[in-house]
Image (cartoon, rainbow, N blue to C red):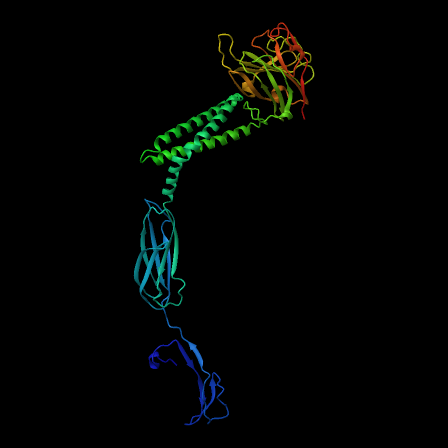
Length: 479
């Protein structure tokens, strides 16, 4: 059967039904029902039946079903880039929705409200141009359909949609960059610059082998470029409309410093030096101290401590002094590390210095201090290694073949470090004996002090020109 709703007074949300079978004559009663009713006796066709067990059927009434979503063509809003917001309202129900309110909020602030009609199984798209503002940060946009629940829907839980938008990210970063350029980096840059400058100066003073000259020169150029950028940035940072440009230059200068520090650190590590050859003896201690003097031979000739260390690639030698004046003198070292060696009565540079044992190599460094009217340079102006080949000396320039670092000034040489490749000495030995001395600036001079202290240099009538035969060496066993 199909019964029009109009025939029974209109559509309703609930219907109670029961069906029965009764006799064909007037006055007969029910003998069976669906659903089965307890008042019906199947064997009695003429009693009185009061039916109560109806089947109750709920009949849903078609309603609108509204949903909402929100999207944007960009998620970062800047001065030059607004966001095109799209709100999509769908009606997935069976009934048209009339006079539907749609609202768009930025956080809790209402941006715009619409009143729309949405047919069943259709959608309506709404657009909104979201412009840049000074309220930088993350903004939550919220689209709400039927905010007051004026339209009865099957589901009221899908009427809100949200979207996160970032406003002024670039402007905020620029502002932060400018503030850092004005108030932070100008205070931190000078300290970092001095730190980096000292690193570059120390590497330059190490007088590394010639193959590293271009690398060290590159460090100096990068340091100067950083300082130039910093000064340019400082001159622009407080000029109207040039603040950002100035901040970028200062930032670039600072980053270049940090990067240069890292490059220098990696460069030093690549050299594989056990010691930092920079003239500062901070990484030397008593474990490598092989000799120490209690007295000197004058204000410009005072050897204090001698250190020796090694690894698989280098022999490391360090020397400290207690000089208080700068004299024009030479510093010498003798090494004995294999059988035989040189035992003549003059060393490899013609000084009147002999050895009671055969020496296999000598090192000489010339300290160019004042000499009468000549002020000198108060620096080491030459450094050589001489290796005995059994018949004569083979000479090598240490500044080109080894690493040398030292500190000195108008008070003379203060400290010295050397890293000499074992291959330059003919290989790594099992033991090495070493002595260091100070002698005059010219051939024919002799030693005036040694470390370890040797009796041959104790005061004589002509200590700078007598003949010295050195027999006291410090011994270092190589593992």
